[in-house]
Amino acid sequence: RGQGSSQWKLSDFVCTGQGCRGVPVPWRSGSAQKLLHMANMAARLHQKVAKKKNTSHCKQVTAALQSPIGTIQVSGCEEGIHSIELQEGFVPNDRTRVASFTSEVCESQEEMTAPLKYCMTWLQAYFSEPWTTEKLPLPAFHHPVFEQATFTCNVLMTLMNDVKFGEMASYKELATMAGNSKAVRAVGGAMRANPVPIIVPCHRVICSNGQIGNYMGGRGNHLKQWLLTHEKLLKESRNTSQGPCPILPHS
Image (cartoon, rainbow, N blue to C red; front, side, top):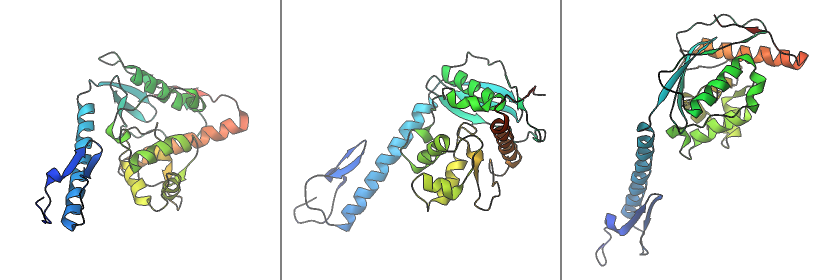
């Protein structure tokens, strides 16, 4: 910036990994504020791209679990789980009686990483003895959505920690729990961005009018209903008898 000039150059700002700040000179120009805002946006974009590159270079291993709701594919690396994918086209048997289910891990082409093993053990317990999942170690997550201090990450972690097995919360209730009661639409976006369903139980988030709402973009609503019924039946049975449920083999 020249003497007496209102023009600013990018060199007038010091940029770091946390954003940009101006050097200690007077700045009241609207164009200077706009430039600072643009520089901060560029710094945040750089951070996001860097984090995506970190996960894209991982050596991922994929394993499959044959479950009552179809094949569940889990991908992860040594650092943690990248994704859990449900079989949206699978139509499970009606969930109308109290029973738990066995699930079988398919052979992986490569040796499963520690987070992958933890994840498979947790998912098997969810279908057979779900009351034991709170005592099992959760796998680490290695996905960009969990590595950024965003509202989406806050919503997903709040959901996982505070909405327990057999419970439900509306989008508005979850927004309030996450610290912003007005961010109902943002909560819906967070559910769509969830890379690890079931462990982060987006199926437990329903509409305020009691309708279950969409799951997997509306393509997995039948799976959402099955999961909610599964939890409801087993929780009621557990509360009534405190005894084990009969285990049905998955066919």
